[in-house]
Length: 199
Image (cartoon, rainbow, N blue to C red; front, top):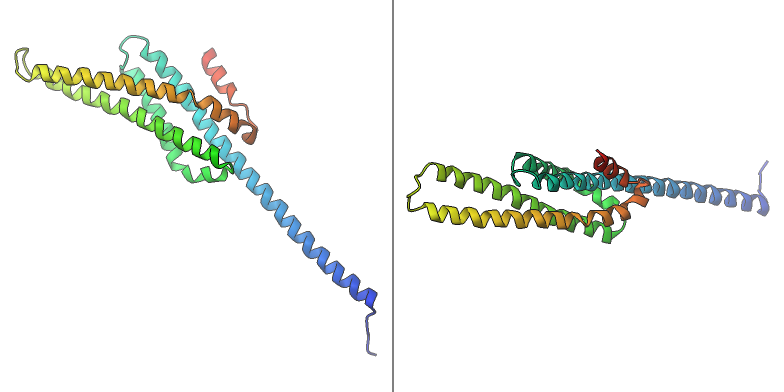
């Protein structure tokens, strides 16, 4: 017997197939959007925590500079710790692309460039001053090179102060960056700073 489906049956089959296809497509789109939102949230958390940690470390560095030797071992340890946060950023830089807002990405990239330059300036200047001071200790008070070495130390010391001040000035941008990242991360970054300041 030759079965000939009627028009209504054909229409129902075609409509069912179309709905199944549309349903599958919609489900994939929803899943893709969910995954993208999760990746963006994770990126916001990562960079938010990184920036927040850097803010706390630089706050401690500023406090340390105000006590005893301004650029003694404790201050420089804090500066190195802040520089390590930049290295974490460098290792995870591609994750920045998970943040959908181009302006936010640009602000973070610019901030990191400025803070890296400043921190490197402090550390490089400190190493250079240490090397010159070593040279000074190896020559006597009347050595003809002594005045020039002392002038170099004075100039580099001023440059180091400028670099440190620039780092602290740049760090003031972190609060605004965290305010932008917080709703995406669904996290309150202020808690870390509050705990650090309380201690």
